[in-house]
Image (cartoon, rainbow, N blue to C red; front, side, top):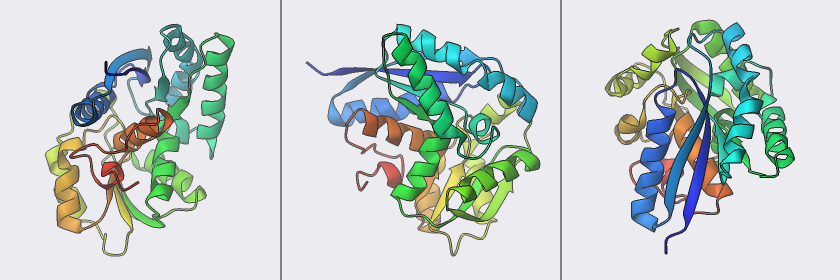
Length: 250
């Protein structure tokens, strides 16, 4: 019998992508390797991607961790990169420890992955020292994300802020536009490209094309989160069509 894993996700109320791209990758993993996954979400209110609303949303994450631990999930993913990064440098470690503590106190301990921490860790896994970043945020929030990543020891040499404040519209951004956006960036001297520094901005369909065009490893927040979940669950990190990080090489 195939082993079943329950995937818990703490999701902004307006997020429509985390619950499509993560399941898409894990279901592809299931077809390739046999393990089965079910997906369970708890939501935090957030409509506009601005610092004050992100902070208010983050305060709801403890409740979400409790709710998901009631379902005895095997891993819990916090699905908002910018909410974590806007709370201060290294905050993903604080958040992960606190939310894990909530599950322990509830008698259902579950490891916690944040998309922010997963992205930072993924860049280290592939050995990236210099990167280019595409983000849907307004320029001030994009700058916070850049500073957060650089605090972790990775230099952002070029970036694009798409300046989409409405989180619903971020989820409607056409991923087919991403290769053209990257084509207008200087990626000649980078070690990797972060095609979407946001789990709400769809990017999965364009990863292979951008890797083929640039010859660079392409990582997204959703891919990094999937990789981190697979590592926690001690499963193979090979998902067809999801780029270098999930090629099985790491």
